[in-house]
Image (cartoon, rainbow, N blue to C red; front, side):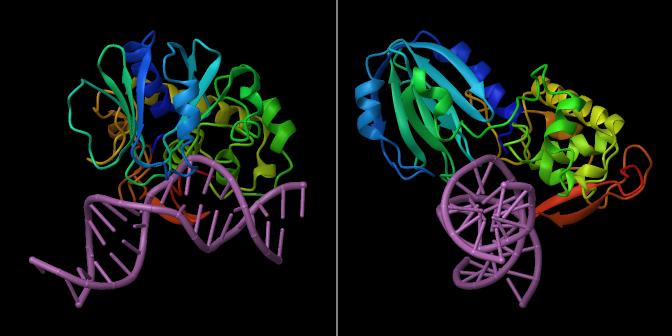
Length: 276
DNA sequence: CGGGCGGCCTGGAGGC
DNA sequence: TGCCTCCAGGCCGCCC
């Protein structure tokens, strides 16, 4: 669900909607997210401060305030950050509501509560326990085939598991990992250490290309309940998906039937003809 | 210590 | 119509 393109889409929406706004009020309706929402700290550190920057690290949104405090938000599976006009009734899963000086509200809505909200000081942000183990950003110029060979080139895990491991490279979830492997023509169950330098290059290129196109499409929204941006509208990349959620359909390249297997407890989709 | 896997959580889909 | 089971999946903690 929210992978890098979705989180980045939300970030762009937040830049338009809430940059330079001041947080006037915070209401925590349900603190029971993946990690307990630190209500007291939010009230003391966030209320009365202006939003001065909105960044992203991996799938975390980092909302920086004028007092050198940073709000961390992770959308988990079903989390949304919505910007709504004042006066709109709060819904059942609006767990945390930030009221801004414009009168609008920023709402964290998350039916499954896999999301996370935390607050930390800017000078210790990089040592935050949720950020400290994260791997490389896929759009970093340091993310090269040589980097991949050096860091995970000896691993015996299936390549799909490696790509989804955020301590290696961040931002890829199940949907985009399937698409990346298809674009690179690599079988998801290949042993990581069996990849040639050329295949790693195809993977690195495919990661950037798939993520770029998904971002241009505003992310992937598979069902009614799926991903939404801050204005509560969906993305369009689902129509460009080549293999994900297309079991039994024809491969767009060779017309072979797309296969689904279970890997790492997750659905894996691939073309048995094109992906070697 | 690399890495596999269970559990968290709810709503929707499908079977009967 | 209603009850049940299964499934979706990011990430952490547990354990081999």
